[in-house]
Image (cartoon, rainbow, N blue to C red):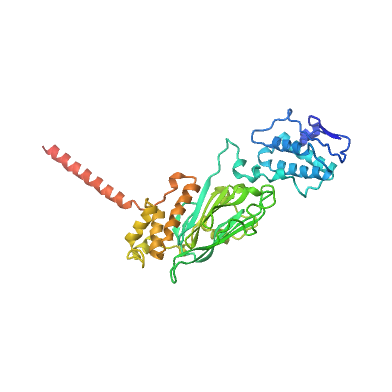
Length: 423
């Protein structure tokens, strides 16, 4: 038997309800031979450029052209249903989209197909808009604002607001805690009795999201930087958009990148020497999202990437640097500056954090931690003018000198003018 498309205008009642229905006319009953054909009337419907409903229609048509038993048809129909649901963001209000929705309901009922069950392999692509954050924005719409947070060294924090802090934060602390993921670090003292700490453990939980990904946990610690999630998988699980979340090993045991395209987020985790570094690129919308059932603001207040370190956990960069001017067992202030200059020629806060770390720990690996932190900024930060950030008042001395010189010249000019008038 065959399902033949019949283009019909909505009835008066359907127009008043605002619920366009697909024109489905069933010819006979579907036999086990399974020559089922489904086709939506494209010529009479206008589909927006962003709406990909016709792609869902054509994929379903292709998958059922030679379909076999009823079970296979139901599998293809569930895949079609999933594809249509994932176009909701860009197709809502489109006639073809609503026609497909109601047509699927009719077919599910006619063939006793369960909404739960296996789907065809076509559903495992990572392209649907709901599972790809950036594709969900129309071409002419304003693009999302991306922000960056970094955590490295012993330890230094660059917040989503581009504040740069040096902190104690010994023990377990949340870097990120929002609706979509949570990140926690554990910091241990660099030297016995030292207030300076560095990250020895890191845990990231990606929460399950619609039909895109299952909940996944990534855990790393010193000398164990895995190329997979804790369950051994490298993607988001068994759902349709599984590949919208994946772990990519860049350098074995040293550099891992986690791409979470369904929330427009990229995470970089490195091991440099004995310690871990963390960097993330995330849309501002995701940064500020809060769990709907999270009534406790304490977790949000301790979200270091957003709010920074608590005041009692911050280390005065300049004070410690001046006290350590004599140097540690391995570095003097001048030799630490010279070493950091090899990798960080610009004397920004990454350079000064490198000097601080060498003086406080004597561990030369912190030079590379600062270097890679800046490299990650160049890759992840959306504003190239903000790659380098400097100490507040770093140029105040120069400004004061410039102001004094300006006043001297004005005074000199006034004296010369008086002398000229006297003559």
